[in-house]
Length: 121
Image 1 (cartoon, rainbow, N blue to C red):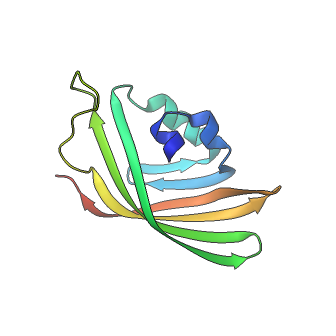
Image 2: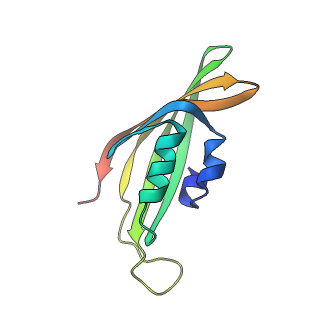
């Protein structure tokens, strides 16, 4: 998510299974092609930061792992002229579930989903 926040989408691709699915609150992102479409559609004046914590990993077998974590998302339109950006509250607080698979010696996310527990009005 750090690469996503910094708009480093090419770097983000190294961590994703080419055919993986990311289930977001606004719809599914399917594979690397879907990530590239999302990157193009992302407004330039939006600043996003993901803060993840409380990681819990479950090994399903030698090449499959499930990672669950809490996420707090800060998302603001950059409408103030100073840095750091102005913000009123977290955009959402929820939980991620990431399914990883070991492929060619590297762990890649094959399925990512979010449960939104709190959302800003």
